[in-house]
Image (cartoon, rainbow, N blue to C red; front, top):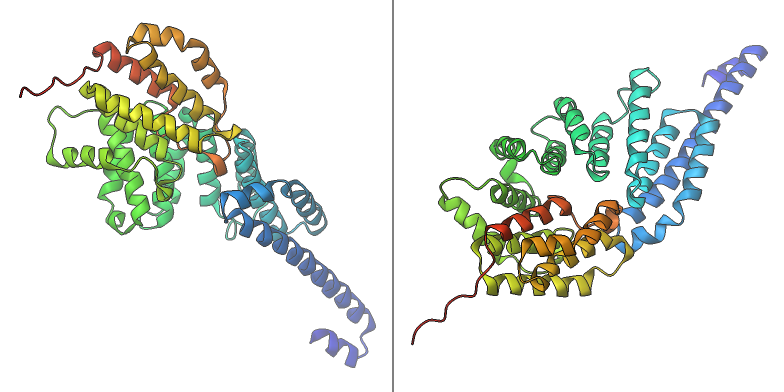
Length: 362
């Protein structure tokens, strides 16, 4: 409208200056629209099935290069933000968690230096991905320190607060700070919005609680705790709606029966784990889970003798320690790291091997 007014008034200099400004704005808008289109197409694939996420992986380096080129030309918040989001998603799928730490730290510095629009940049997403990357890169102690600082940016009434606290609890468990995890979980459960979460989320919290109660057994077992133990033992050996947690469920059941010294139940869970491995853990990205399940099979081979099982599993345990976690698209969740679970298994065996139930007299 102003350009038309300059034209009517024959203000040639003002008309040319404004035309250049509008041309630049139109070009910037076109670059931003192209960047958002690329990002949206990729994001739709990433939000699809595991197979769709695997398929889009090969396309993502070229798309990120396109987005980076667009940002070099536009130098706008929009082009930076879509490049940053896609970069984080790509590194997560690849399992390059150290790179996510670097990217999120760089974004925090840009925000602190006033180079990003604080009203538009989602600092909560940046915080979440940062501590998630520390968790998956096996640096839980550093992640815990950051989580304490970042927690203040999440309002307890939001769903984002629960997602953040889930990673917070896992960091404490991976750092073997079990009392801290227990304290965090008690705060989470007291949140008035806790019970309005989706059923799948509530079941994950129950699974974390069951693990915490296993490593920190109370002096007296309450009715609720007996109910929790029964819930864990009755979970199916494979369930699509618990994808990513099936190994954790079966291992928890195995730990329970090792503590109970119930030989028949231990052998049954080990057989279920063996079958689960054959059916579902054949991809190269499942190496950590396969190594751990092979370690568990050693306890039968060595007749539940802890020193012999530990000695026989030395090389396998070292390989497990050297194997990084896979990208998110392919992962079984380690509520407690497999290395720590192996120590727990050996500790249970040292307390006493499982024994067969005595036959009932006729």
